[in-house]
Image (cartoon, rainbow, N blue to C red; front, top):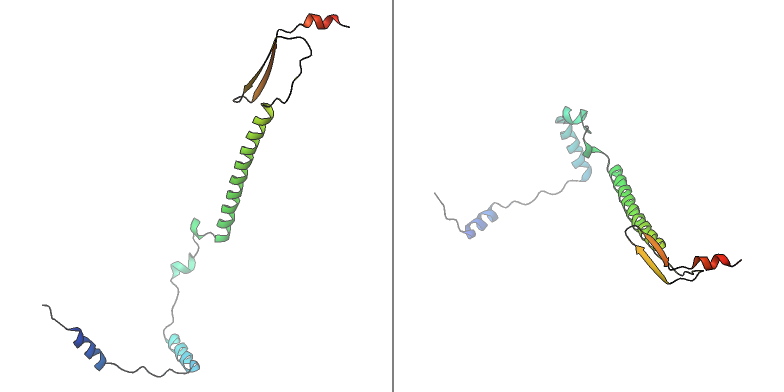
Length: 137
């Protein structure tokens, strides 16, 4: 059964039962009473917590070791990625770049082939006149 109570009645009843707060005690007196009361009700740590407070679980490992391991792994991954990119770009540039060439015999054509996949460069000279070069002392 529902009872209809108006808020005005709730407010008036709370005001009627309102009691003034006790005056605060001095700190020394409060703590003496608190310690005396605490001695009457000693509390003990449960044996399961006292004997197995760390356990053999991973998440009980100290935070500083976890943080240090994570930071070290991050640095190693970043360095390996940097060196992998740097070395790949350095090899591609050194093997596939021909700045100049000079052919010392008569020839009909020069073809420059660059293979990016194998990082190789081939300079193909065709129609060379080798016999003419050998006759000269």
